[in-house]
Image: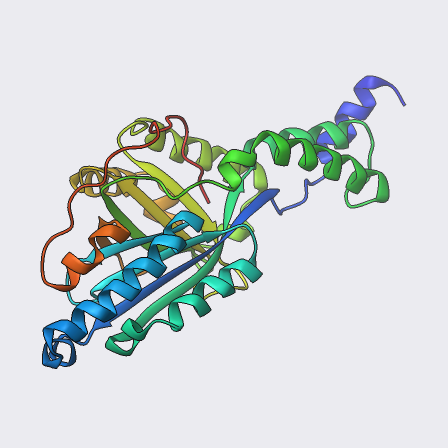
Length: 299
């Protein structure tokens, strides 16, 4: 078959619908309501003892990849975010928290389980097109071998983004989201090339906020009730409003996305936990590492 004939055949072969993704850290969000009336009924020395125990334990968890936030609004009082290298370690983080006496005064409100995900729409389409142009049958043994080699290279190159530390932004905004699967608008029935085109335009908005906000996308299909969880970290919470509002005007968000509840919190270092439980707003944490810039990942 000539090169021109191969090119013509490649144009007629439908590319596989599923984009490639890379997975990294296991993630757990835990929102609690604090039982303030029970807490205030304790003697001051009892509150101090329980808070000191919790502070020491959470200091260790903080070093392992957990963060604590004082929440705004009625949806909860305290948010714990845990990043761990695997789900066994994530389960241990939850169990360790459960051992604290402080948990007797925390009422679970919401939790969310996910895994950090990097979507690879652009590179997926390029790779699929290249393989089809070479006459490789989709999902054949040869196809799968090439895909796995490419994914291994990507995993190595993206390791820092797949297994990050929790960003040091003063504020967090977390929300779950889906792509629409209704009768009139169904993201998953669009050709992969069209989804890639829309995602590229969607990502350009995020790139304009590099340096102002850090975004971490985690996939939750098969883990929780929504398809993705989104964490935004920034020192100025108004940036959350500006970024999310601007994204409402692009096709991916405006036409094909559904959003769950939004949860906003103020960072509290482990060393500030005792003060938080006595009703004092946490102090800002000192920055210990530079804020990375670059393109936020997109689901």
